[in-house]
Image 1: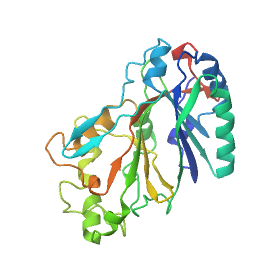
Image 2: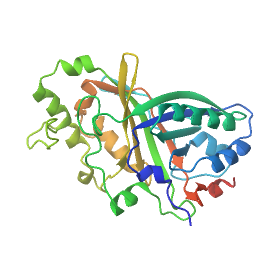
Image 3: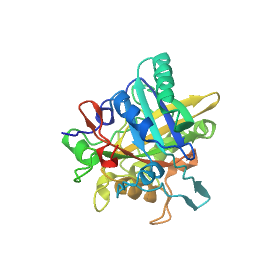
Image 4: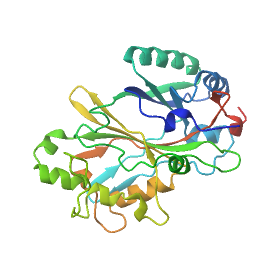
Length: 291
């Protein structure tokens, strides 16, 4: 019986590596995908497939689509689709690097990596701004219901939205503590939700139970830092993309013209959607793609 890739619902590991790939023009991906199927356990290596790859295999996954672009209110949100996405989870940076090299060798006849970025746990699960991330994540059976599809034919699979956000920490540091807390809608000191935060506060913009239907996702985000640049590698798993899109549209002010206060100090550099197939007997189950 197929089940979700274990890494999706497991606690975050101290370190991670994220890699997105394009398909080499004219290449047949089936051999590489069969090799990946046998090498990726879904726990230490979580795999997502993009629309371009699934479409090439002529096996449609109805829920899978391209990440939507957005321009408005002085903000541009990019769509940066990819054919394949790997989330390598672990505790040793050297091991992650070598595992990625081995996977690259398996995929090399059909895929090339476009983006590779390392993530890490900070402060026990905090963003680099110091605020706890994923406080409102559903747990237990509620997490499974939010993140895992039960649809016949793809039961046990998940859909992930992936964005690399870049922070302007100099701008953030220039804010008062009260302004910072009002951006998030929580006190950084104790993570308590503010009773009287502005409508632009991130917590108010994304309150999952305030949507109709409710918009629950399972966040597995991690900070990143390279040179002087830093931010958050945002990943949100769902049984479809509908909950993520409902939240993100409200963050962008599409409904009422009020943008999320997060945009005062951070912005997304990328945006992509992937289908994460289930696992069966500790291997990826690609039967929905006839692979």
